[in-house]
Amino acid sequence: MKKKFSLIAMVGAALLLLTACGTTAVTSSSTNLWDQIVYGFAQVIRFLSFGGLTGVGIILFTIVIRAALLPLMNIQIKSSQRMQEIQPEIKKIQAKYPSKDMESRRLMNEEIQKLYAENKVNPYMGCLPLVVQMPVLWALYQALSRVDFLKHGTFLWFEIGAKDPTFILPILAAVFTFLSSYLMMKSAPERNAMTTSMTYIMPIFILIMGVNFAAGIALYWVISNAFQVFQTMLLANPYKIIAAREAKVQVEKDKIKAREKALKKARKK
Image (cartoon, rainbow, N blue to C red; front, side):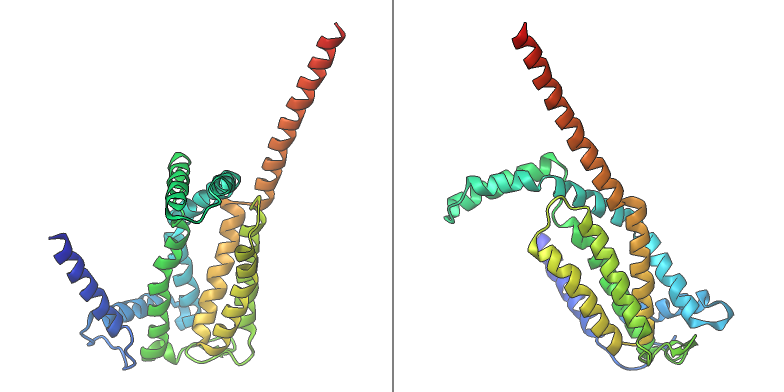
């Protein structure tokens, strides 16, 4: 029964993916499921477009999506912080099993999984908000390119469905992407090469995509990543985390000094 259900789910996902690649116009009379989702997104943006300003609709739509994801993001942030805190323990376990044979790998993974369970860490939790946002971003892209009343909307200096001729939005999107990644990385007690490289690669990727995609998508990235910066400062302020960590280290140092002082006094007696 489980296999049958999994097969049906996979076929359904494949069909939905194929319909998501459509390029024909989407209207209220569109019949397939994905087109109805895209049109639903377009209608929500239209409803939020106060004064007929589609850009305002996209901004408010983005804020609504990000606000809805806040509980997930909060879980992800806490999980990431716990992951950072146990990195020294993970390195000790890895050093304990230097061999590359299957048995050593198995034992190492078992110990690491046990460590995760003890500290309530889910290494895959960091991907969940991104996985949730990807269909939303694709639906928005489709709405901007396939729904007429969005495609031809204008806001400030740009047309929503066309590329930003000034490159202001792609640049802002890249800047906020860098800031959000940098703030998340700053609080880490140890930085690995992958995290550091992604902090600089992702803004470049967003800049290139923003230049080539519709201005409405670049606007979504600007607001989404600006919201991420605000959210990080609110829920996981790196400066507060660093200060708390340094205070904890100082307390431990003071305890060691107090013990050493007490031992010296005891020896003198």
